[in-house]
Amino acid sequence: MHVHLVEESWRRIDSWLAAHAPRTFASLRPPASQAAISTAAAELGVEFPADLIAYLRHHDGVSAGKRGYVAPEEGGFSFPGFEPYTLAEILSAGSSKQESWARYAEDELLEGPGGYWHRDFLAFARNFSADALVLDCRPGESFGAVGQDAEAEGTRFGEWASLAAFLQQVADSLEGGTAMTVGLPYVPVVDDGMLLWELVPERPHEPRSLFDSALVDPVIAAPRRTTSHATPGMAWPRGYDNLCLTFAQALDEDELLRRFGALPQTRRPRWREEAESPDQQVQNPRVLLPVVRVGTHRGWAFGVEEGPQIFEGTRDEVLRRVSRGTRAVSVSYRGDRGFILVSLVDNGELVTKYDTQGAALLWAVPPDYGRDPFKVFPGLPPYDGQESTPEQWRERLLAVCDAVASRCGIALPPPGLDGELDSARILPLLPDNNFGYPEHNFKTPVPDRFTPLVDAATPERLRRVLAAQMSSLAAETGLDTYTEVTAALSLLSAEDHPGVTDDSALDLRLRRVHAEAQVTYADWKDRSVWQDRAMAARALAEALNLPARESLGLVVGCRQDPRWRQEFRKQLTDD
Figure: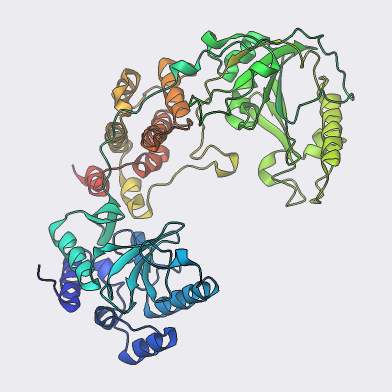
């Protein structure tokens, strides 16, 4: 097959960009000088292939955007998945790699077919991680070939015999609108005068679910023990190294379990040994459904969780629900690091938070932690930012427990903690933010270039656009295979559509999808489908609970169709 010259492919690329993506075309830099190219080659001690010289003599990479780096979303030119280096960046990256290569030059794993690196490899483009597109500058038959260097995997050649062949494929993809595979398949998309290479999504299959099999645990035989009657100030029972205690005033065990999200079919008395989280997921995959054991004491219901997982009782959305119409306090302890977290919530509103992990680095109370915890709980140990020993961690925990017990009139630890308690597995509540962590509690904005169009749209149009985009996302991820979801989608465009009601059929379905995404699977493709579906579930919850303007960003941010932007723009502007 005839391979076009580098100059011809660049001219085709330039012509296409000028006609279809002028903002991207404007980002291409002028040619590098022959003198600068020769100097760089001499400094690296590498012979530059003629294709590379012709490549740089046409464009010396791409100009950085407002953020100080090449950003396709700002109009920066890129190859599929990779951003071109300038000559200066080729020199810098080459020098750095040669220094690393020199330290390990005698390692046989570095060279030969499938080797990690060679001093005569030259990176000319990079992606968002440490991966790169590489030219083979070693003398021999492979001289000038283009390959990919993947972090922790090494460098592979064989796809393109030359830089000219690579550029020809780029030009062909642009002109034909066809996918180009550079590790992953990408298709060229134009929006607002800019070229964007979008991943071509695989058609999702129906992933397997291990949810139902996880609802029944084997009963672990445990000897009856004498119930512990510990009182405030006494040492904790042995073995409590990772735990969370959540107290709710004036509730009983039934109501506390319901507010945690307990699954009725899993409810039964459990000893501590039976409540441990399923750490053996790799050997025995199952849905990670935490167990909460409950009891009552002095007018408070309490729930105890143990294990390495994220405790439900530390999540803001859980504490808001547990404290509805009452007051809740949570105390958690990570014995492997000595981290302690205390939260006090009144009727869904955070009163204060004490966090030795998040605040110790500041030596102060972060502004989003409510009132000063040292005034709410006199006697709390101060944040000192100092390294300490496990013994000191334990002393700090006891001091924290004394302060909380004195303020709230609860027993820490509560009596009976070491005995058999009523319990259930929990179907976790949906996170009420985009990432599931309080410090990231913000709403995904609509991309900046769509903001004027969204601001100009009427509320009725925004609701229609939101409904259309959410329906497309549900179809792309398979979320629309559930009847509860399809019923909700049909209501989205209505002015007074209902939100997601706690423990409704829709709420339980969305929470179940989210739980499926937490499973460790032998087949990573199953997990990937569940994770995409879980993000779509969260987007649907926001679309139903929030105004269209606030929820639209997460919905479009999860879209998988490479040409969603054109569709979105058309929906916002067409009458």
